[in-house]
Length: 367
Image (cartoon, rainbow, N blue to C red; front, side, top):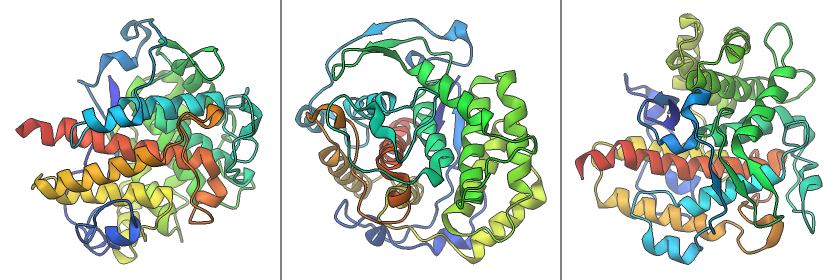
């Protein structure tokens, strides 16, 4: 079993209809089709995801060696169907994340340059967000169907080293779990508070739902309980990710406080998160557009998707040594400043992935 992004079906909520426009969220990246009525899209495990990514048990994983060249941006633009993500783009991004993972398994938003092979990659963030950055970077691998059980290896052309995505995810999960206290909290002294707790909970719940690994169940359950009891006063992106994490936990078979989840939904109804031009805002707006267009799937869908794809592919660093595969933080916008290059690369990869999965499991059914 592997992980994909899917649309949460259910009752309509006012905050889904009242969100900011995609034009405000994605300036210059794609034509804005109108208001973004839905942002809540959980990560849901399905049975028919590509087996090549590794599955929920070692028996599902197939050892493989791969050093095939990454397709060029130009060739991808010509070959990529209107709503399919570019394989070279996501592999480049994942390889950049692997190269910049710390030895202990986490991603340091400020000191990731220690993993650089030549000049230090710019775009440092703040260590205050290292739990959140590590969580969303790990989620980028899970959403690409890579689990700790995956045994496939590749040779990175940037530094010539042989690496395994499965090992990257294993070390990241170990680091996250070691940062959790007995009550399930990841907050520590971080000023990000609920936001980091929500991000870590999302990743743990996802990992458990995908792998069904006993080692992940208790940490995930504790994280869910801690998050559900600490949402008082949460707003904006923190509340959005918190609800996303709790919904994902439900799908993964974990116990979720129904009253706490209902209150969180109510808070989002009353005060929708504002989608900005930062990486998280782009992801939120993309998911909103997918939900808006899922029943229509017309030329607006195709045009908008291709424009966003082309923009992200064009902005990804290529043929620039150690920078290959990453995206630049957009100045001091939103959480980009705190998360830095690791944060932006992970979220932009998730944005491309959401387009791919929506096409595979929605559009393609009618083609």
